[in-house]
Image (tube, rainbow, N blue to C red):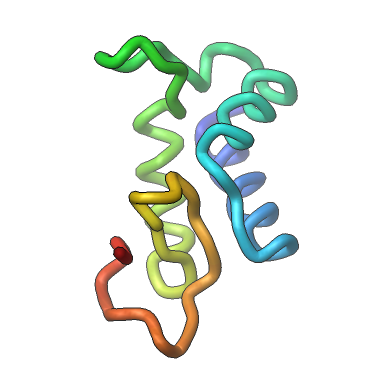
Length: 87
């Protein structure tokens, strides 16, 4: 397994379910792909490997947005701002 495969899994989840929470992604990535794709961030929380996130961003640049307040990705709606980051 590599970061591209994990990012493809994330992309598939968002496309099939319409959204993916960061917390669900972390737990499922660890379970499906192993702990090498997660790390402990500065706040002491488990987080997704940065290389996975970079690959995921590239794959989903046009059709997925990040909701910071909800800590989740979802499919882009026609009402969304052009930025990937939505409020």
